[in-house]
Length: 131
Image 1 (cartoon, rainbow, N blue to C red):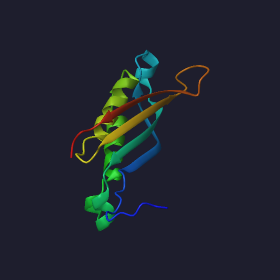
Image 2: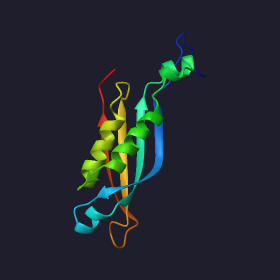
Image 3: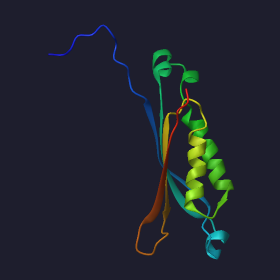
């Protein structure tokens, strides 16, 4: 039998997933990598409390993932990175700029980085104490 309660159960954080964002950038430290853009595949998870957004149905109360994505695209496509770690860290910082963000994780794949592998990927996560 369910427990009766006078309080409305709260909904957990909203989880935004940006899946397989395919971009090109200069990534790597070998001479050929520094001269030619390469494909990268970006996957992002962002958690934020969405109570206001679902209660008001107002765009101003929601985290605008399109704005975040546009900033990531510009940074990645305009940048030059020696290490995958630096690129992932930069994208993670963009994902966590908004004070509503509680957690974010970024994985970036570098296809064909190794001869016998589909890709090499690196993931970084950040827990935010803001709000």
